[in-house]
Image (cartoon, rainbow, N blue to C red):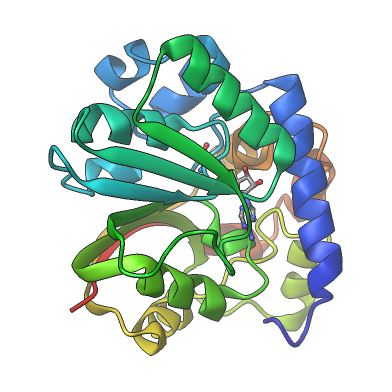
Length: 271
Ligand SMILES: C[S@@+](CC[C@H](N)C(=O)[O-])C[C@H]1O[C@@H](n2cnc3c(N)ncnc32)[C@H](O)[C@@H]1O
């Protein structure tokens, strides 16, 4: 993928989109419930966190977090999974979020302050080159972010580097259920990486293996209906508002490409 795209343009487009969502706060409780957060989890979080929820699943549900652990969230956005992880690991543990969009980091830090969350930290950085020491993290989580990366190999290598031996990776992400044809790929690209960066599941797993991950398990896989996809990528959701995805959806309506996008939950381990 990285050889076929202009990496800098993708990174710029992604940051612009999520800076827009950080400012508009156009997501919310309903969206979070729809993508897999329990009522109890949602009730624990303030609106300012839920308003920028933009994942495609709930990685904390498969992370098996324990008190005292250090958790790292790749592409933490407004911090939804960081705050839930922080509650699970308790005061002796820590949850760190890394995100490339300054507005998301500022928003998450503000929320942390207002929530009095002392075991969380939000760091500005890219998941392909993280400001995190090697072998220091027990669990790496991520929610609908690696699909946006123009260098997924590097993102998985970085996740592997920061994990302690025995550490776990737990991700929710968007993938393609099969290879899309060239004309369909063009349409995906017009979304400027909204899901334009999603790759086939076997390729995704191949990149995890290449980074060194073992015991890779697909915990769940759900192929979106076109209605679900429209909700995911509309005004709210993993695309955020004002990103032009509405146009993409209109262009794609009726396209077979729509039946090839799935959300998956995957776990893996660093030996
Ligand atoms: C779809 S949103 C998901 C946010 C959050 N994980 C959630 O579930 O609400 C994607 C987030 O990943 C961040 N992001 C995208 N590409 C990134 C990269 N290469 N490095 C770091 N953050 C990135 C964006 O800034 C945005 O906040």
